Length: 281
Image 1 (cartoon, rainbow, N blue to C red):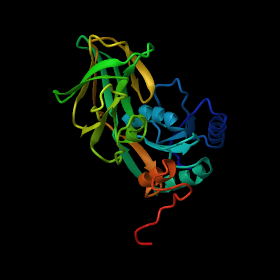
Image 2 (image 1 turned 90 degrees about the vertical axis):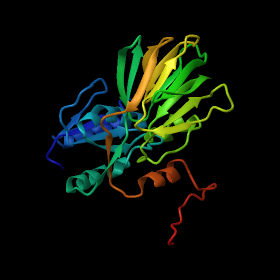
Image 3 (image 1 turned 60 degrees about the vertical axis):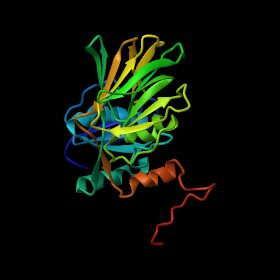
């Protein structure tokens, strides 16, 4: 096991994840558990995430500013971001200590909510920022622009600004495209727009995307990586840009992304026929 400190974030609602975290800490004095209420972390050489994608997103927001590598252990139902199953964790830690891994950098977004020109919320996300309808369930009316150029005004259930990582999450469910994780792009996806011609749009990740809640809109909320972050009022503005740092994912294998599409989303298969046949087979 590595001599440096290793942080452990886990799904505190999952008995299996709790048990595994306890085992790690008892077995190795270099492990430190990070409670869900903790918003800071002592310097660690590696962050282990025990849980599903939601737990991984929380871990990424916690350590990405420090450049800490993140190793995901899939204890959820989909685990699109996690790298290994629980049974492989010990071997993975040995592989990490040997330096036999690569780092995959994933774009994150910085989000500001502004009211009357003043910022009242700042947040960072690995998947997406969403301006969506509030508790009333009524659609929102918003205007969107990129780098000062108007895109459109939408009456919709909401609007998603997604990273390439988030393109396989909420943005995909809302009809957006899947982006390879290394693309320098953001995906803009209206949610259930009241227009047959409103479609997802891909822009550069260097763009500044602004979403304004229009005066006649119903109540709205800002959610970051699936977590409600703020209530929005008419006239409020949400600004989304590329974060100044990426999330750094530990990868122990080579063909991760497209293999995940095949195995997690069942691409290319019909019924039980999901095996991939290489070109040179």
